[in-house]
Image: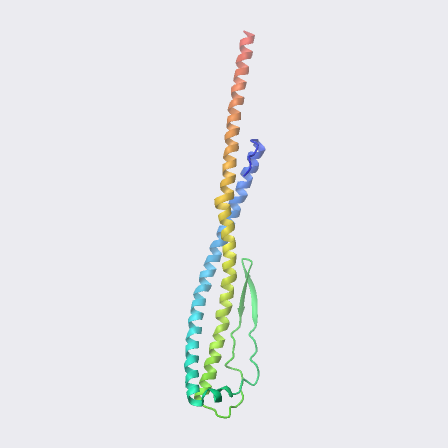
Length: 207
């Protein structure tokens, strides 16, 4: 911070600036803690969703292997797709401390009607259902991952600003305020000495 002329008004301005910076740091520190708590909460949910998604993926792979063994890959590729494309889930957006957070209804792919296959089998039916359940689980995991990414970026931004206030700006203001007050104290002492000398000189002249 550049040198400040040691005046009473400068000291008052620096003291007010320090107060505002402390309030700003307190706000950022509280926001940082709230963001960290929300990130940890969503991270636990994401880990659960990711584990569920991984489990469903393994089940789908096993069902696919059984269906391929029953029908062969070429025949399985001819299985009919759903009669109608499944409806996309309804998504909604909210804000958490100014950060966009998304959520959606469950994705019900397994409920989509399908055409009757020519060579139906339990293996193929289980394969279709297993892949549908796997795809359904990707929605929540992906939504949570996006929320975590946005909250993480906001946390880093708040962290940088808080550290700048705590480690750079506030110390600079503190140092400037301390320097101005010390110079004002010296000036007050010099002024007191001048007054006493002037009074002593005046008294000596009267005598």
